[in-house]
Length: 223
Length: 366
Image (cartoon, rainbow over all chains, first blue to last red; front, side):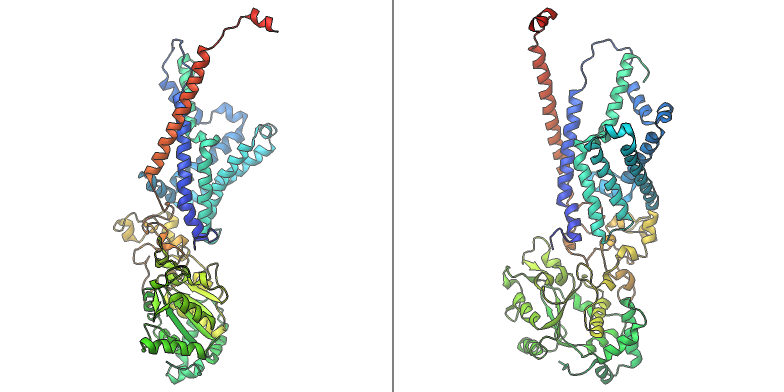
């Protein structure tokens, strides 16, 4: 009864040993990348600063996160679908009650969740938006040439995590242990790939934006 | 015990069971197994004409809970009906004979009904490679007894999670080397009636189906009868609307628990558990675990003892360890720190050993 061929065995394998391996690789990889980035820091700048760094840094974190009108006018599709699926992904990840329970189990912190049907709707919208981003990437003449295998890989793993979660919640794969096991498996794949691909931006995006703003601040230009 | 010469119909009339009671049983069984109503007369006719099969019930590494459950089969006459419809020739707990007389009854029944009797097993058993001394009956190892009894069996019914999947004896570290019946028997029709214990009407329903149609009911990937194990507890749970609304009990005595909200956060395994509790309920349809305010343990699924805490939500990994994550993180920070230090050193060395070159010198090299 311990073969992976049986759905319950598969679920327990993904919830047990595989989860431990994935979370260990994730923690190790992410800590290594962040430590490297933060310890290397920036080249020392010997010029006299014209203004402070902290405030402009934080301001840029905000301004680069909110869509600005100029960018929206130039690339409305990118801004809109990008924002929709990123927010949707975060809502599904952080405000779905079973996920909150997982985080509580791991780190002991928790927060209120959203009703399941709302998260379900957000997930469906996220899936559509993600599919649209792929179509756009495959058809847009510039994006098509800019895209690498890594881009398609992280698109696939992100899409699969959301898709399997949607299928499991709506019980569209039977038996359920198989559906949940597949969702956990893809989430583990996501965790393992995260520190070593562009997915690291989940953790570095605000550090990068702060660096940018801080650099503007030093030079006394608009942040 | 009784002989098997009777047909079920005659035997029931001898026992004073009315035709009305018999038809009620047929209707109940047919509806339980989701058979079309048109099949009820056919089922009744088939049952009446069916030979009362000899049944040999082997109890191995078990707790007798499955037998306790069977004898509480909820429609009042069902237990009698079933016990009258079959010829239970060997069952430790229910038979009058004991010791050598009991074993003689088993051997006699096996001889007289070779190829035709039903073999019911409850409890797991030490596998062929395990120490047979962990469980014996009359000095015979469970394994030897099962293998001998299965030779002449028409079909095998594994009753309870221990017989179906190994259950508690098979839980880690499985000291007795326990295995499930289906791990050993590959060449006979087999049905698993899992549950710890199984719903009584599921046991009797499977028997009635076998008697009426002469074959075992349709089964799922785990050989469980689909009529009873086709849907999950979650999908038939009366508390499901609260799950869908996101209303959960957080503790066993908070507002939510008193209001009867969903027990997911208290560890309910209903979403991953396939059984008939939510529809058939227990104790003559009185209640069932979730209605009593306790999360489903998932007792009818394989390895339910090893599936993590009964009180941890289904989404929580079975073997959580924050310190493991912290250790991995610390190791990662060390790796990152080392890489950064090495990079800084490379830059510093390059800076000290830099040899300035003038434009004239460069031109000379061309």
